[in-house]
Length: 250
Image (tube, rainbow, N blue to C red; front, side, top):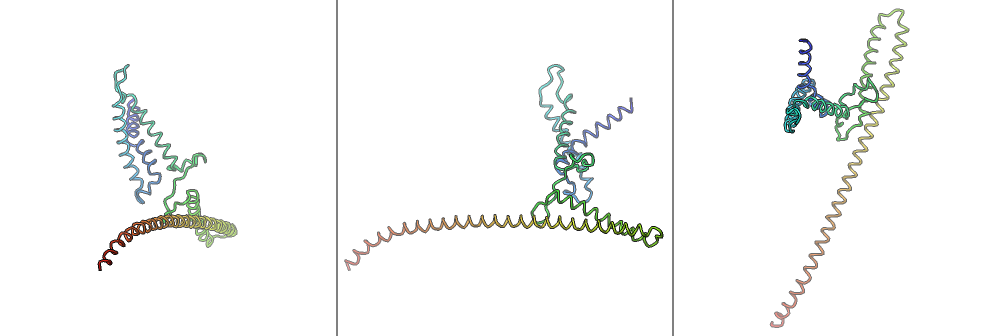
């Protein structure tokens, strides 16, 4: 019984001070490397604990503001604290999965696989998540093939009977490497085309905006010119009669 009580205590502490904040942090930041390139796990643990403490405190405040139970006379915080935190954690976990914080779930079922949105590619145009992760997987596969080729080259130097097998394996790996490079190039070409298309669309929108601005300014200037002409005509007509008596007196 003592061991069970210790396990319950440990599980309660982990749940209260880590689990809700962990899922909230993942829902807010599906890619921890957006915050820090190094020690991303340290940031995850620290922010998870801080968010968990905040969630427990805010949940207690909300439940404490509810009226007492008329049957037991106790506050809602006693009976509803754990279910409320459990619902909050489940909702945060669903949001984190939707934002692609757990791509490893794709190993269990392809329907559960969701990838996070990649960061901007530097030109201000967001890359396609599917193409981005395909490129990452192909680059990882390329490194593996190159490592296998290096190991095969070292083994071929000292191999005896296995030389034909190693040569065949080298040809297969080389062919696969060429296919991976071709696929990588295709994806990069697609990305460049998408970037050029987005930049062209941005330029066209800027030209339209400038055209609208110039048309408004032109119309405004024409109106002001017309108003000046209309105001100046009576002034000249009023000045003419005043000058005639002066000439007659002379």
